[in-house]
Length: 397
Image (cartoon, one colour):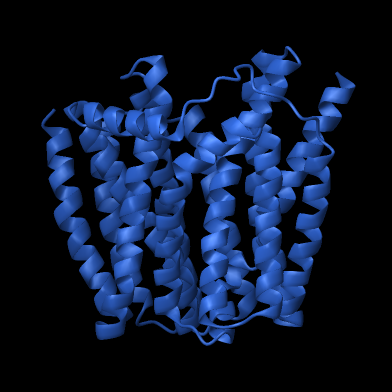
């Protein structure tokens, strides 16, 4: 058992280092160093989610074909190449290329990390420990991102972007070495479906699922909430810059955001397991209205303390949305047979990502023509119309 613990520890540390995105809390400032602006930040993130959608099925197919360990290594090498690219190349196309590569890297990592852990635990005949070890894995991922939020802002304010990129190259190099040192394990089944068959099955299950009103309206509503929560989180850096925040507070807000998300995951399992999900639907609609009001308010404020409090409030609302997502996903698992659950989750993720991509890509047009305030006003109108429609449909069930 000691050998098993050491290998899992190495696996978790590798993912902790991979999740330490030091540049993330000051991404807007890095964009501006490269001659870009807020509109490119939103637009490129839309491209990120669109790329994620395109590579979702191929990444899953690849992880079944060449082994999950190799997919992880390729994912980490791609992430390493992004930092090298940004260290030596600058400007619009360098940043855009990096964001596209980051989307591919993240999809490959997401498709392989839990699968590798499951294969390893199952191989070692300790399958019953999967929940515990998967919980540890998610803790390491959250801890890496949260701590990087504080470290990244401090490093940026003292040393600049180049030092952050060199640090990330160093960290990801260690994580690649750790993954390479892990055992190669073949999945229990060597039968891999053709990628065209996977796509046909995905489309077929998608069509069948959306015939069920108990599923589709919740999926749409959850997807909309997720896409707007992404929009809120992306707005933090422009809002803080507008309010003349010192750079270290960028990290404080990012840390609080990730800490709330981590707490929400624990809270969902401990205190909200039996909560009426329809009440959550109404509650979140009201809370998102409050979140939009906070955004409108902070865009016109220069008071650092008041803006920080309002951003913290939005972070808490995003955390409550995460609780709803966990309840929603748990509910969906009980509505479909076991062999359709994986495809159901893929469909659920597809909806949230395509909506996020749509909102963020079209943000460039609105911000170009009308400015940030008008863009959020348009987003608020879309939220009211779409979410109120699906909320009524859900409540009528």
